[in-house]
Length: 293
Length: 311
Image 1: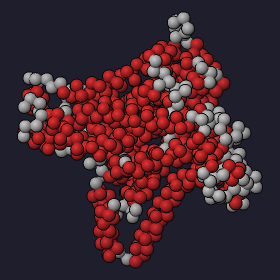
Image 2: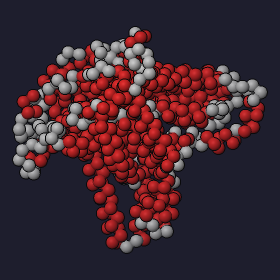
Image 3: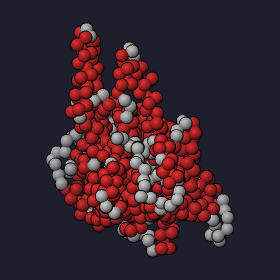
Image 4: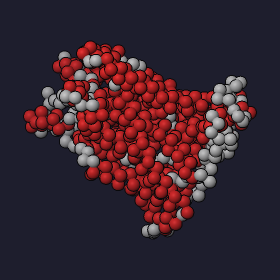
């Protein structure tokens, strides 16, 4: 960020020096407008998050109060307490965690080798394979989960955590392959070749050279898979009846839960996501954007 | 060393890498290298089982009657259902309205970040937060804002704009419900478009816009004639991805509007979960798949996207 700033200062310096005053004013006006815009956009993102937080920590009465305060007054943990202790919430949160971790492990275990192959080898059909991976993105979750629920019933996978995790892995896999491939591309091939010429076996060259360098990126890819699983609700609802994940539990009880419970549920769903995005923010652009060097 | 592998230039220029590699290909023909295929095998098998198989299976479920014969009954039931027309209408209308709005808003956000203003990193972090928020949670968030006891009504009353709370989310005002859903989705799903565009802007060399500036191009001209044309590949990726995802919108609408605004994915859920008719649910799923594929095809065909740019 500081580099960006410097570049910009250098950009502006000669221009401001040689142009007349009115232009300078125009420039600083434009600059001011830019910040107003940026702050407005920030409020647009932050305010709804504030509102759900305030709702989750209001007393029950305060939520139905009219007119109600924009600040929770008094701040109360009753609603959250009630939500966290209501039937099915604790177990479904635990289920979500387990499904997320299985998804994380499976998608990395299956996806990373494919990503490595796409990054390091030129082979016939490589481009078509990448295109194939991309087209899987065009597959709606709906089309996976409904027929799979029938199949899962036959295989005893229906209403199991591993069943949900398998579908989540399928959803995360295309992204994991493409992201890990871009991470392996970023590890200089020369280092790996040097290790090979110095007598390393291909496998040990990978574990000793490539893996340590790719580790932070791989961790980010893993977290992405976890977040996808944590947030996914359609397949989780379709494929379970008793062993619900947290989103499935919240969705299933949405129509017959009171306002405070809904808000507490929404808040609990959001908090882990916020933490994850904080951890992987460095990799955001590489992950969802195109591959940027 | 017959395991000779190609130094990978960059993912986005496979064509060039292929040309450089020509002598290698000749050499390698003597001993075929199985390593990449072995590495790809698990992922390929997994995707085949969980993508290809369910797709074939859903055709069978949708077109098979209880005796195992061929039937159009499910399609018939789907089309004649009272909600079908509305669900199709709302889904398509939703996409037509939300996708352009998101692209414009995301472009504004990306351009603001790209000016390199102070705290750009901070702004970018805040603006990407919705990426990690599920559609269900986003629906609940905006429910707390739009409901009768919600914050919008609170603010409107304090500003003196209305005396009684406005029913944003009721059967009587389908337009308001639709607007609320669009706003919520705009809040939740613009971030992914923005991230794609920010990444796209970063690879445009600064020299291009600077040159245009030297020749006296106004900021608007620079945007229109330099930045946007160079951003085209990113814009296309964003368009395709967002439209596909918009076809699947379900939990956000469900949390915000309940049964007031039917959408295709919501109907599939309803037929599966409430009516317990897998056949019709699978038919809805097929319809969504068909629309998604048609949409991708249309974008690729008419926007002239090279397939490899999508990576």
